[in-house]
Image 1: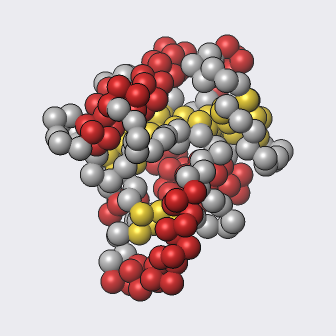
Image 2: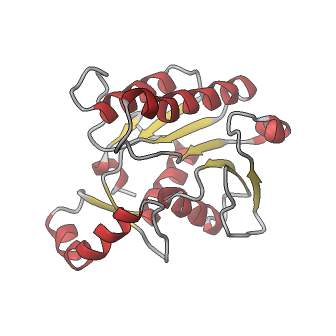
Length: 219
């Protein structure tokens, strides 16, 4: 399986990249981002460019890509709905629509979030925008499109979030995580588990297009 990965410098993307590198069934990984990942691996070709919607540098590789794992995302804190939509909806769809034209047999996996609003009409801004993005991706025409909705994610293997307040919160909450996982196993996942789940879904599909925490923690 050949994988195209967006967002490999983020916390989830780092976890996905690591699991792809370790999985013997993943032959090649192409990462696309605005800044270097700082990691190197024989399987991986890294593309760094400011304009993520310009696919010309990877156009020749798209026909052989089996799955795109889209882990790009930003916090909605301090952003208007218009600002948040430009990154969450506009950028994602601009890339996805080019990918499906180049290779409709590709599987597209999008990292969304728990409590995303599929109706697009709820009171919470980020949830509406994520819901609109999910719905548009499901209509794009990919062979398979899957929306991952993780909640609390524990970074593993030295992975850190680019959002510093998340690292601070994790450091404070870390002693309570084993207890929380015992009391409510489906309320917490890890970067490792999310990465493995995405690889499994890319390879084998899943029974439904939207995966909640209870689905992700099955892998």
